Length: 193
Image 1 (cartoon, one colour):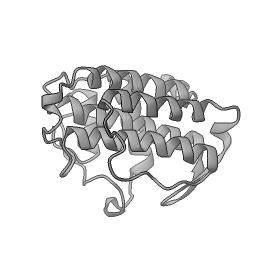
Image 2 (image 1 turned 45 degrees about the vertical axis):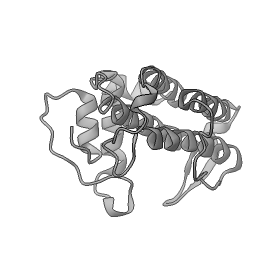
Image 3 (image 1 turned 45 degrees about the horizontal axis):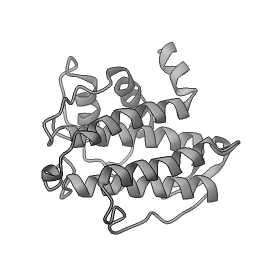
């Protein structure tokens, strides 16, 4: 637990580590796999990557401005999904790294929170969606066990007792305690490993 506290004291480091795991999985996805279904309801691989790109673009604006509208539609365009993701990541990463950025307040759909807390939500989101992309594309889903343990503990802390009807997660799926951390995170967030 002490190690986890030490880790969560540096949200930027966690975000960067989650991004590295995601980029490795993204780099292995072939053009033929873009239409495969994912564990996310009604999203194929390309739509999920588009969601991640939009999330990074939104994060950059949100952290800089305090409130922002999430981009909608196809934000990948004619670029390769990996290039689009990496460009959007650079913008989000730069915004989070600005002096004082983590101390700013951001407006979320459920209320205000510090940008540092938002960075931790993005950390969970990136790892969770990495698993969502690894699974249908036949890649190893036993991702970054230490990071996934931190994300699972943070998820339990953030979402315990909350009504999931107003959250982007389904009800928790029961997963064996000895399953890989990434599978347990997926199950906690309502996905079926």
